[in-house]
Length: 246
Image (tube, rainbow, N blue to C red; front, side, top):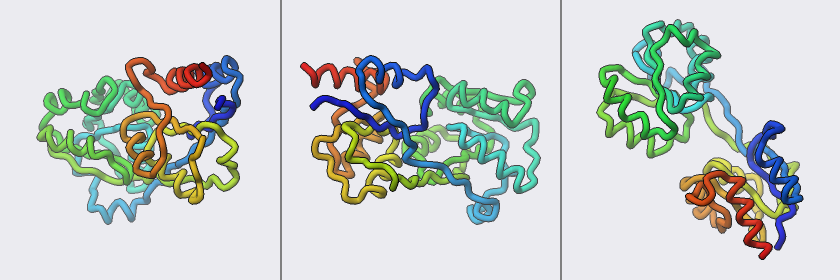
């Protein structure tokens, strides 16, 4: 079956997106729609977690969402984040995003290469801080395992939740391929389309946890990224399309 239409479970990208280039090259229709969205908790709910923001000397940020919700709650709780706060960020892009909330040059900011495990040398370098990890309600077990093994003093604070978006206006059966990037996206598919039958619909996933979530939901995974041959999702999809047309 030739792939003619694809639904990507992400927001509409910029004009320079490789998805749009692929759509032209392969002559296929590609639509974009976030399957999930983020909802922040309020100060009252944070207090029920017994979190006192003033007790922490270091913050671990894994996403831009975590940054926004930490500073939102700090303002809501009238907590002035001290200049002495240490920030450990998962990537340089996340670290640069801090400039939205703080004067970057005056703060103690460190970041890893890309994955969370890349932060281990930083935890060893700064082992004496009391760390807070602002996160969603769906904290990756790998993150918890890495932090526990690092020997630092840390605690997780649920500051936002990832919830399924309303997709009732989408005709899911009209697409030849669905593309997912998180286990929450897979969950949203199951919740929004309880009678969905995969049949000939191809499912593409990014990452091992997304792949496992799809399999646990009973779906067949047809396209997987990243791989050595296809480090990006668009490359994996293009390879699949070429192979299916042979």
